[in-house]
Length: 352
Figure 1 (cartoon, one colour):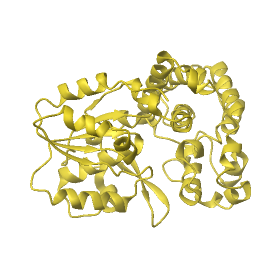
Figure 2 (cartoon, one colour):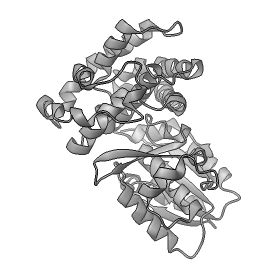
Figure 3 (spheres, one colour):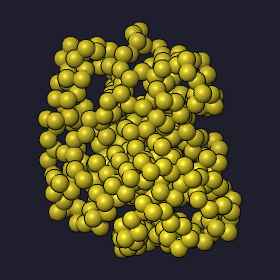
């Protein structure tokens, strides 16, 4: 484990918050345990900080409703939100920023239904400081949260929830375990590929996806303990570019397959969204082609993913037969129907 330099992100944050007084900070228990929230509190004297440091790795609609109910009772109004953490923290911040701005009495589940077309609500501004490299949530105008009752993932979409500012400091990645670094990196790889084989793909989204893969893939199978500052920086930039790509396209078939696997067997999202990628890549390369696709890069990506043996990692959580029982739940509207081929249960089984 390497020591962390907080100078860049903290200095950038101090400068950004100079004109704000009432500040909501969202983070996780692990970041509190590492002492970084204590440092944040002492580094922002004169500010009214309220810190929620119990954001879970799989945030649910019920949990966010509970956070919102607590925040509404406070005797002051927040001006800005600081999201310090991984994708779950940033996505939770987006939901809370929208709820606080709307001052609604409705549940998040009801708000999600109308937010995409709502032009009257403008979410509180968000400063996103990602502490992992993979979700790209700091680059997108949507947030995914779990409906624990239905065991499905839902998405809050509104242009106003895209973070106003993001602060990148690759030193924040140095405190992660190998697994907590790898799994988000797999998610970023999935985002890149999902944007390529997507019916909404554009020249720009493909360009961003390809550049993301060029930065990420050389580092995907590298020895984490030997990572250089350049490698950390490349993965962080690649994750952001992949996030920008799915901002145009949204995700597709591998994410659609992943949702019930995570919901029923608690498989980490990065793993659940990436173990099918080698087979989907093979199918895509055999059946589809675009003039601006770097096939050699995609084949290198396929080889790197195979080398990681993601199926073996997956088997720590569930068996192949257990996964097959979920096939009827893997066709997620708005995701699988964005794949370039028509998706049915036979095609899903082929990718499994």
